[in-house]
Length: 236
Length: 179
Ligand code: SF4
Ligand code: SF4
Ligand code: FES
Image (tube, rainbow over all chains, first blue to last red; front, top):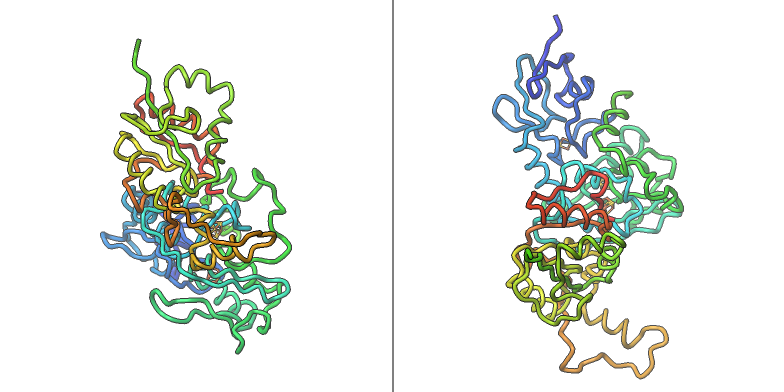
């Protein structure tokens, strides 16, 4: 007999070893997420995938599905929590969307739209963050990094390199690259690496490709991130 | 005659783009004018706002005068609305927040290309700059936010019609954008 959990009252089958988000995705249920990617080891850092399991909140991208779980996903309260988390991500970095090449194609922005985030609520940090334009083909704008570690994982697990890492803790947390100079140009990153394309925000960009898609035809101009994300991740 | 809804508008540290977008209502401004009258606004040249129902504010807060104007609006408007990216996040003017104020002034008035008779303006009439550009909600309570750089005329139309009809304003997915 197939094992099942219930998500918002719907019965969802799962296979042994699947996380809640994997079972949900397979069943066509979207759970908001940013640091989760079906191809890589879960990291559980952004907390956007917070769901309520048998009365307790936990991260759907790291929590294993287990027989008999009652999961709340699309509740008003959880959506409000997720909106607050997203607002914190915005004020912690510097997100000037009107001047960002990723705008319209950005997962952070799209999640914010999906959660109907109209303001940033919290005071802005305006943290001073650097730009690394040293590499011929790839740019890092640290202002937009949300420390999801997807670039770190993609470099290790897919590209077989160690280009990125997260250093420091708490407010001093930052993305570093594997070069004594601290510059991207001195790493072995190539523009064809998965790590150069995985960033959910505009923190890692491929140079000379910005603004090629006109407004109105960008990924999230007409489509919610739930549709886009399910379509991409169910095929994985 | 029913009393008209009184609206005040202003641009603080903004570019007037949001006001231009409001004017993009084009012929819809005519039916709007049947329902509302403009108090203090660049459209009317009235200098101070009194007893308004709705205050629309474009731009963040970058100098001491902005703070005074914002407080005047809060005091005199029942509903205060942050309009556009700059009002909501500080926006592009806040990109100066990462450069010391002195360096900004020196770049603009002393070392800038083509500057003649270089000096930093210091007339006592000029409002003092704040060390950082701030979004409105960090200074006063804001009731509604209209994102966009600028928000489209459609956003103004939907929002004002909802509000005037006494409905809780809600914007469709396609008209919410941060750029
Ligand atoms: S990374 Fe995304 S949210 Fe941040 S500025 Fe760019 S488009 Fe906006
Ligand atoms: S650069 Fe992008 S992918 Fe890497 S940690 Fe930052 S947000 Fe995540
Ligand atoms: S997606 Fe689960 S914590 Fe980020």
